[in-house]
Image 1 (tube, rainbow, N blue to C red):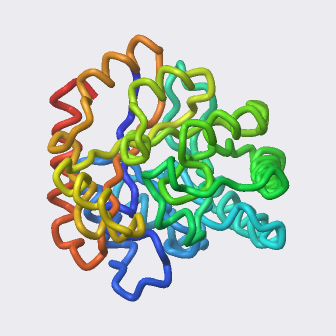
Image 2 (cartoon, rainbow, N blue to C red; image 1 turned 180 degrees about the vertical axis):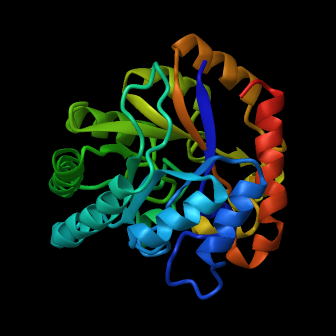
Length: 307
């Protein structure tokens, strides 16, 4: 099994570029390298500058590469199409100008990837993790989201040779089992793959092992997280936004939560998965002083169980 473990700026609380408390992007690169990672994601659009020379030099100095860029935005509204395509162009132009990540022999599509996530809907944010009370999109609105995703994926593929991967995300309109199955049926494999996130699956009431097994044929990229059971049980009883739960510590270093990573390691070996797995731990950026320690704990634990 040839797997490379990477990380992402959300481990430093970087999810919303408007947040005034975000750490400098160069500090995130410094600490990702210090924790033993060879690569990381760009984070949300606008966090890392879109200047290839600046970013290439920063990566080279630290021995790092970029495994993926991210569109984390409202994918439902049709009037967002042009801005989504603008983001796609900016991210993919940067990704393809940077040093290429390594490629494993069994990898379906080479990195870097473009992870595509729906976000920005209060009615779903407050229902994150609750499939029984989360309002579903009308057929018309769902079709609009599908068209937006397909447009982004085709732009990334045809314009830049970048593989788009759909990332189900707690608090978005692609979160639960029925929605994941439906989006994979509506967006062909020729246009986009899947990035399953073990932490989001668990948070949203699914078995990460079962979801990895069920969707192995579309699995191009994986995110790993872990969940603190005590915090999770408490926030599930509250009316709370997803990132508010993260700020309270619902995501913890891997190996300290409820997800069985030795079992996932065996499953991925059986499935023949090769390529990249990115460690994430969403948090409040005001607690980023412990990020280096946490991401190193996660990396060391995964190494101890065979990753």
